[in-house]
Image (cartoon, rainbow, N blue to C red; front, side, top):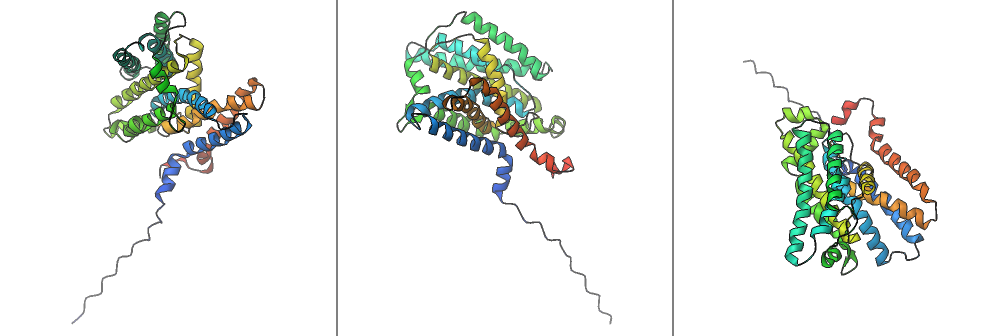
Length: 344
């Protein structure tokens, strides 16, 4: 009797070693970590050179100034994730400042109604931008440039000359400090990150926004809600710009239809997004990195002041920081031969 031949044992190739989870997290948030390190180094140098050092007033003032740009930079981050660009965030910021200086005063219920009107104005502006871009099929840069002019016209009509007021209690709640010296503006940023950004980031619309930024065609073929995701980014952009306008009113206790201020925040918000590691091509980055990028840009001017350097050097330092940040984010592309390896 012939015995059946033994079946050869199946051999499997050894699986490659699994990378630790923290390496993936660092790779995804590399820009935010770099911006945080740059800010920490710059602010430490600033505080060491400042006569008051790490005093409560120095920290609170720096936090309030940085939070203003951080809110507008967070607003800019949302459309950038879908490879768009919102050039109206600065004008929404100015418009809501004018609305707040007109409505947010008086009795508590009037203050609550006024705050709701300010946030509603931002949401309406964002919805208009989203509708024009998504269903009007216009380029985001051109569409938001046009709507930005419209928003500035509304601000000028509402507040033809600087003035107005805001509730003192609300202003203190936005710009003051909590027990222990914690700036309220930092608490506001943290609350927006935990209660708005993170839930959005892990929602269907948030993941779809990242997918649209990576490849709109692939996102559409995958059945993702491309139009709704893109529309939501502009609505959220208007909301964060309105929060920034409310904070500006709390700091200045007045409102002004200032076109130069709006234009400055438009450009600075884009710079903060880049410094924070968010790609202008979309699909990568996040609002947390934009916060640190905004604080880096705000610290440059303060650092030049305490070092007794000419303020005209600020554009030069800003350009160096931007070039350094963009160069680090592109380092991976320079080190690979085949760009398809990025997606492996």
